[in-house]
Image (cartoon, rainbow, N blue to C red; front, side, top):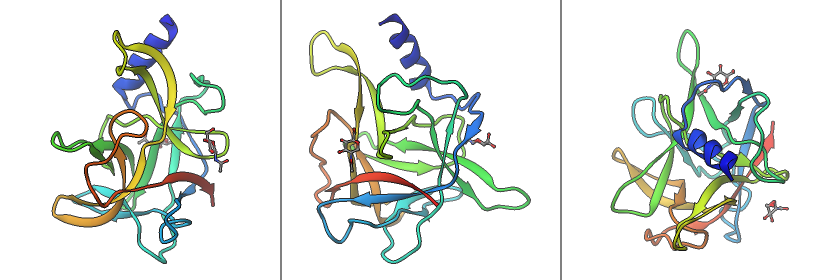
Amino acid sequence: MKFIAIASSLLLSGLAAAQDQQSRPFNLVVSSSDTALNGQKLVSCHSGAAIQSLCIYGAAGGSEFFFNTTEGAQSPLEGYEAGGSLVWNLNIQPTPASLPMSFFVNPSSNVALPLFQPSSEYQPVTFSKNGTLAIFSYSDDTQTPPVQEVTAVRNWYVCQTSFGGYNYQTLAWVLGKPGSVPQNPSCISVDVTRKFV
Ligand SMILES: *[C@@H]1O[C@H](CO)[C@@H](O)[C@H](O)[C@H]1NC(C)=O
Ligand SMILES: *[C@@H]1O[C@H](CO)[C@@H](O)[C@H](O)[C@H]1NC(C)=O
């Protein structure tokens, strides 16, 4: 329990230090009971200066992403990899900028937007053994007092979102316990899976 508390405070702080190993490139593929979305590959799309969302673009090929982790890091949950940061490379000269994913949270919405942007902070994510993208939760505050336990949550949706004046159909995350209902009525429940290129 003590170990978990320490691990969670480290992970939740999300500092980009010591992320010393990078995965091979992969696509992120959506699965959904919505047949228009099922099988679509996520594409990084411009949402401001050096800010990118994860878009659904129809026939487009799918962007390449990476998973940065710390060598030797332990997973807090069986069946899942150790937490790390989801990374996308912005192609600028002379060297591409490695951008971590973090959530943009609008305080008046329960729909958070995953964005790649220059930042020393990131949203830790994990992958299950079959490649599904998830986020570790370290406590359950629906119980009083809150219970410390590690679970893997997959509150992924595809929604019509608006950020920085850009309206797109993007990947989104619904804040709250699994099964929380997005207040954005366009949101469709999806899973996201890593496919190495
Ligand atoms: C990801 O890891 C690579 C290889 O160590 C590193 O060059 C890059 O800066 C890292 N990116 C982030 C956002 O941590
Ligand atoms: C992948 O793993 C997750 C978590 O264990 C599970 O819920 C999901 O059904 C699995 N998906 C497939 C396609 O096997």
